[in-house]
Length: 226
Image 1: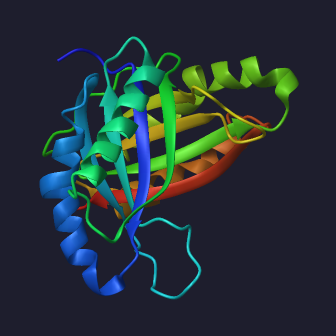
Image 2 (image 1 turned 180 degrees about the horizontal axis):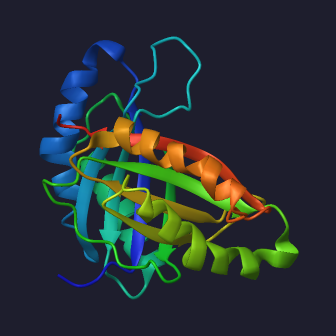
């Protein structure tokens, strides 16, 4: 298997609360495997928010995240292929009638932490975090801090089995441009979050948190088939 060069992220949900279990099984057993046959996709994994939205209540708008790992040279072409594949499945009547794609994102590997292992049974979850720098003038400095200081500090917390960094191919407007994808092993996402949070006061006290660092959308993901 070739190294991943990109990541196509699909944020989705079922629009009928009574059918969520059926929809989720369809996603894992039929839809994601069918989409993963698209040229340029090296692996696909389907994840659920660790805290699911309450029907009828405000939420982030999606309940699940599918990660398509790309090994293509032309990431835009690979993403277009995935879009075409879903349109073809819809025309063939192969989409669940309650399937809703809320948003998609296309990212490329970035920086020193650019090697993502393929998904395996040992991977139990992710912390999925969009991040950015609140001062464009020092973005390069902030980026180096991420590679050289922040990622080693986070891995030293013993919360994560691995980490990879990604950059949006088409940033658009003022959206956070970077994604940090933390891999969680057997300890589970709840313990991982506790461990990473426990080291933050010490990191701040030692002056190892960049003053321009800002977190955007951050969610914890667990296996959708658990």
